[in-house]
Length: 337
Image (cartoon, rainbow, N blue to C red):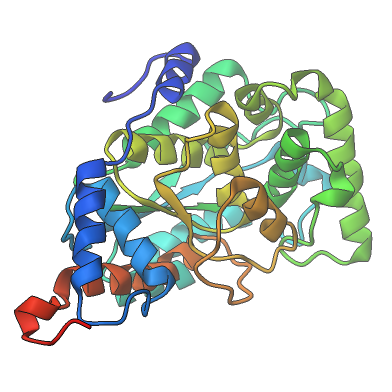
């Protein structure tokens, strides 16, 4: 599917998703069993490489064309003072990404990654979700479509990152709507708010949850009610990667919340994804537990921007290169015990 023209069409796509290549998976398992190492000696790297091979449809793959896409959006709820930074920082950071001055730019250089920046109507923040739905239906559709179109079908890995002042508040509200626990179970300090700021964020999230409690049974409507354009765009990008069978490394809490929307629509929706890391945003770990994802890294990051996912590219590339580049016992002339 090249694109979709309605939310109904998107729902239909999510109900019947492409699957991994089982032939390539079994061939990768067979190859891994013959490599010059004791069985299981590379630990989780072995399973990671086999997972990657199954999605790209090649038992001896190479990871050569990763893509990082940073989606930026502004949130009406930021006007309530839920962030340590003012809303105009979103646009300023977009300029910084474009100029090559952010952390994610440096990480992409390290791993030779193509990076794209997509700003979504920054001059028009979403509505304050305590007053009504954050997005109209057509705004949600447009954001999902933007994320979908941002994925390069020729890439062999996707990391979707974000920038948006106030988006940890939005993400916490979505997580609470999906999994319960109220604001107290999901709201963290985000950009570093103090105790008073934390209490304010919790009160704002609880107000949003109370207002939209009637839609909690439908993940896509939860996204419309409590989300942001960049969160919706990440969901669209992760879904687009599935249609192209492009493996995905999830970034932090906000990226994982966008993925949770998809998993809520279809329990198998995240089979083509791995968690790049677990962040210092305290609710991220429990969110990954809900998603059934084991993080590749735990470095205390809390930046966003796709940074943790980008760093994890190195781990994934290491796994893939070992599977594809190591000699088998027969090739190396080494006795196989």
